Image 1 (cartoon, rainbow, N blue to C red):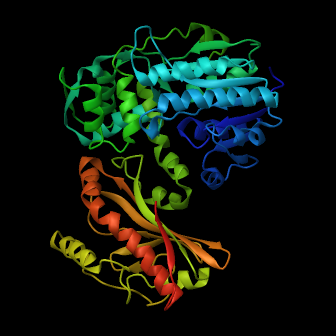
Image 2 (image 1 turned 45 degrees about the vertical axis):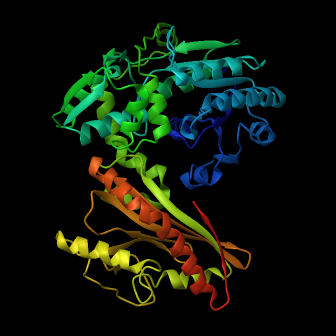
Image 3 (image 1 turned 135 degrees about the vertical axis):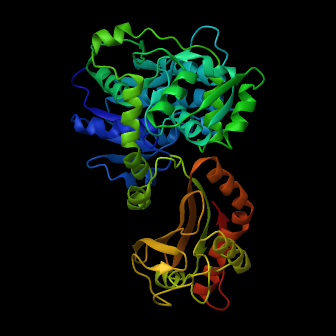
Length: 485
């Protein structure tokens, strides 16, 4: 299979895909990256990578992405989309298998999950069913069944990380005593790429694993020791997986759908027989402590790569107790005015128009900040109409500025986390599309609670802000088309 050099990665914007693509490039493969949101892939700036927008649930979108490729990496899952994800995963696998046959693809590499006999987890059953669906087509499938992956952005790793950083005492369900052999991200990537060099002409299924069989409880204890934290874990039999997932939404920023599926998959031991792939693709497997240390070392860079538009902020301001996954809210409006007019109004923020909507709420928040020793009432602007990088706007600072395109203000009031506002402008004929995003990296459980407390105001505030910016830019008699995001 050494001649298979043209590959396409479905799910390239995800955790595994985002790490697999650059390693494939480094090893000389020709790579296409596919996502339902290709603009996110374009932001990565991978040299020589062609990006495609395609959705495995829309079969008609798959042909252009698959034309002329040798290998498909299938890294797609639907856990973030709530109920019925198993049916959607099954349908997507069928669509991909059929489209791969039509395009003359030579092999599909699918990343699944360990699924021991008797395991009733919907997540694990769906992962196995996806592999079976792919194998129903004539294109040979190599399925790699993995346990928990230790790496920055891995849902299981981030849940563990948030629990250790956020809770000195954990009342946990009994699933924390289930055992598995977690695998380090670099070891998994080695296997995913290595299978392209194996002379496998038929379907193959490989279990992969790390070198240590550990309970989730022992993993959390060892993680805490590595980062200098003291934790006490108290497993109780009363918390069901469903209740655990609902509880986790207030402790970790990992998306609730993923956390729920993850917890469901941890109800039983996950043994693996990785002897065959270790023999065929030998490598040094990282132990748990080494894998965690490597993940923490890479974390800042990985967060920056996940969100390129605020990468420089993350690199400067990141702290280990921030959650990997940010919270976000905002709004988008199409404004009947040129980009120059919209940009002009945005750059007056903090001046005479203040913050464009619900100024009394801003005043209350600023006053509260002053009461706890912050600079919320220390109003200042260098220039009433223009901004430049590094400018101070009241308690905010101009962190990123690309004239007529993007403005990011870094939040400066006292709060448990790091956040800001990003304004993005795109010309739309004679009109302008304005997107406002509020983003927040919570610091611990208090950071998450702060976000939830602010959310009711956010639901109104940002939509009003973009609408009022639109009215100012359009002038008397204008209008803007407003939608929430």
